Each structure stands twice: as structure tokens, then as C-alpha cells.
Image 1 (cartoon, rainbow, N blue to C red):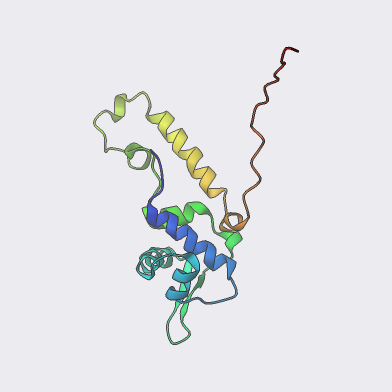
Image 2 (image 1 turned 180 degrees about the vertical axis):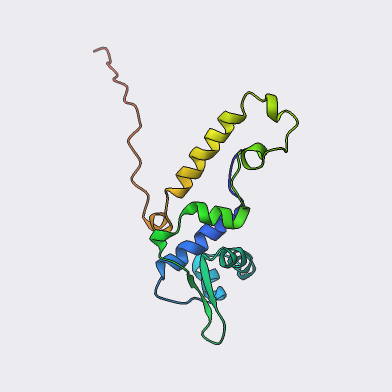
Length: 151
């Protein structure tokens, strides 16, 4: 199954809390409380997010964290890559030369195309969009007409 790690999911939650309170500097404990996460978990995700320059940290009595850029300028891909490194559906999608059958592989080019589609999809979603409520589900229920015989 393809999925992001739990820490990446939590990093997205922390980032949305920061985006929701964009005018404030929030301490790690405030972030933990507002995100519904343990303080140790928030500390784990803040470090790589700061290293990727997605959040800014401030020291001191009034220290804490805020977004380094506007939520509209931060793509979901940046958050995923800050937490997990370069996105790769397969090993050869990221690094050439790591597979013994790379030269004769008939599916490598297609995996790279799929990888590019996933990257474009994540790049196309901003942190600001993650704050928006999801659209209402489409009515996908099928109706079956039932005709009963008259008794």
C-alpha cells in the first residue's frame, strides 16, 4: 500500500495549525494541544520542517514557531519531502543504477511517469487548500426502480 508515514501526516496537521494561526508564534506545547498530538511528536516533526525552511523557530520566553512563508506558497510536496526525502514510487524513480535489471526493465519508464504524476499532484495542493473544508461528497448512490405487482 502506498501511503505517507504517520510523522508526515502529523507534520501536515502541525502545518495546518500554524497556517490557521498565521499571525501568531506558537510554542511546541501550544501546537501539540491545538493539533491533538503529544509534545514529543510535535518536536519530532518541527525539526525537519525547520531544516526545510517551512517553519521558523524563535527562542526565548515568547519563542515558538510560525510558517516561514504564506500557506498559499507552501506545497504539500514540500512537507512530504521534508519528512521523507525525495518522493519515489520505486527505487529507480529516484536514483538510477540501484537495480540489476534497470537496463532491460520494461516498466521503469512507466513507473517514472506515475512518479511524476504523484509529484505534480502533491505540488498542486497548497497548505492553504488543506485548511479548506472538503467538498461535499458526490451523490454516487444508484437508484433502482422497483415496480411491485398490484395485489
